[in-house]
Image 1 (cartoon, rainbow, N blue to C red):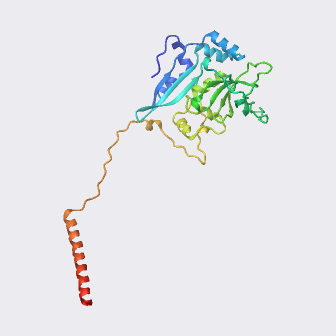
Image 2 (cartoon, rainbow, N blue to C red; image 1 turned 120 degrees about the vertical axis):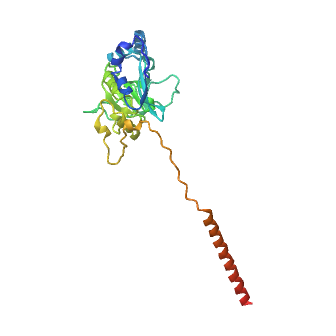
Image 3 (cartoon, one colour; image 1 turned 30 degrees about the vertical axis):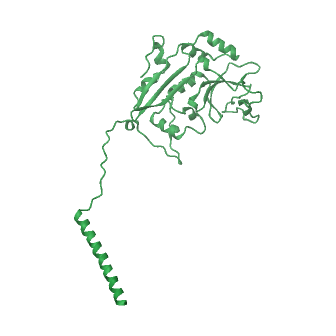
Length: 296
């Protein structure tokens, strides 16, 4: 069930979620669609964050925080009458908009950092490929979404010298620490987040290797609103079950399985079999005794 919104957020709740709550609640097998209400961020909190990090938040993200200090919506699927968490849509609050790759006062002087992964031979942006972010001082990177441990969606300031440029982009950092471009603005990314329904690993649809086979199963069952059909196309060397959620979550009355017992032999046949066996053994004993007498 969706949490009951207060009067402060109710007027724009449907616009904030782009009506996705109604879509999820009418989808087969979906349960516990939950929207966590958050109060708007204080303006002085945003100003304090900008002064601390020496950069200005983009206007669309700043307006978003002035409406709600972060975003969280989750939903589950019901399997065997037990809800299983599946979808998750998260935007960190201002206080959790933390920098990646920044040096900490608690680290040892010679401790390895993300900046050590930088390589001067890395390819720069050319043509249709934008320049990738850097973990060192050339870029400022802030975590927008932890992606349930499947990577990180980041707000990136790519040009910091001589001063931080206000131009930002949204990038996805996978678990192997490779960068993948998502969108140029926060607004565009927010639409992607909502329209992909928060499905597991949906960010990997924008990588060269795509989503995992398990995630592709969920994509087939709950197709995102703006799904690219080529993403779900079957490859020659892969097999994906085509599941119908209407059949998967349909309640069925299980019929008891009757185990058949092997036919038992009647008592008379068992007695006759034993008598025949005993007669054979007695006859063999008699023959052997006759042979001994003849030899003597």
